Length: 191
Length: 331
Image (cartoon, rainbow over all chains, first blue to last red; front, side, top):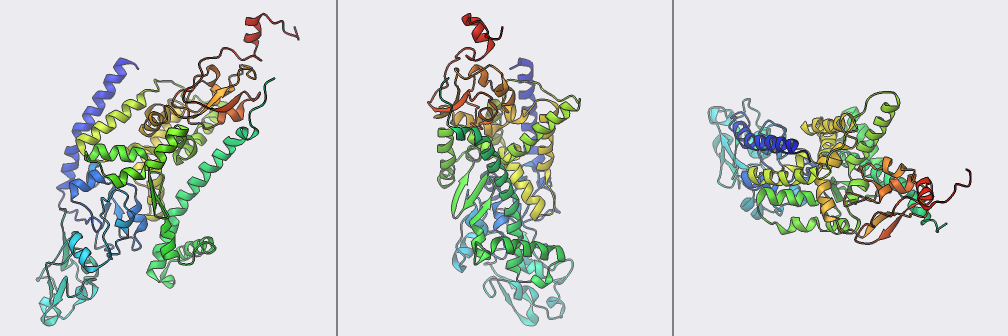
């Protein structure tokens, strides 16, 4: 190999290496991007290094809620799966973990106990100023959308929702919320 | 005249093309099946758009003979050649394993074992993946043919040659970058992984991603700079498979008694190897193109962990006769 060409290659690669983490970090701080990882996903850093970007989680998802990052979340997240609950939320079928070859998305049995233990996509939070039920107009849509009714979410007077500690963050409440901007939304938990 | 090689070897190249095409068709079919499954899961045929209904009907006709419960049974085949699931059995590219170990600096055994079958087959057959399975190979070889057509039309096509060892440098540097940044670098620069993903994005998610740009650039590289340039000089997967298959048992050799030095084998070889001078090396992926094109049946398979050394000019060729002092019958 030509020596100059070799040195040039090394130089270019070194420059890219230096640029990669910073560009990844810069985009991560973008506050408008609120995404969830699929249910059972490892903590963010570990997830990004464990995931091999094979795309099987998306192919297994019967609800088509798993989408894939382009460059909007930085180079490190390129082609990793994410869920925007407002567009399409997770139905906790746990098929993505089943096909994941690297267990970047852990295998979780589709039962209440394992799901409560291992799934940490985020937690729902109610904005009482926006929520119709807190404004005196009985709604209760989020409660009815929740797959873990009375475990993750309970209702009080006028169907006012109360999110409990057990919420796993699937996002079905946010998806179903009839208010715009949504009164209930998932605060992601990246581990 | 020595006996001819087994007649089927001559047709292996056709079988290879059929394999490549059927794998590519599968890669297109799998995303469509996935979309069909999501329609099934939604239980809302009446709400589908007309073109979605069309897709649903076509997929139903295709799958009906094979499955009773498409919602569950179609889960049997998922993924691409990068990493796939076949009836619960997961197979991954060894490069995925290497890239992941470099990225996370941890050994994760269940995933390591998914690359066992490709690893064992590569140790036996060499980098057969490159010639026989890789979905990018199909497009790259068609691209080579396009280049040949363009050349006939009088256009300038790049035909530079570099050092083939450059791809091992790419493999090493890629692993180092993965270690530093902690992410899967190879998934983004390895054409079969990129293609599998991009086909899925285009069909199921409504548009190509950034990988499509990368793949188009490799096509242009092949066309404008060096024939099959990416595979020959840059592909980290090819490098890894070549290393695994360094002492492969199935090799191609030249039968010197039948060879007439026509050099067609060397000009057909996609990987820039030199069968005419018995120079195969670890990059030969047993694609059998040289066997198919040989006009005198001088190429055959044999089993050995090493290539034969240079055997000299072919005995049907003019150089051999001149060297041996044999008078040409026609002269």
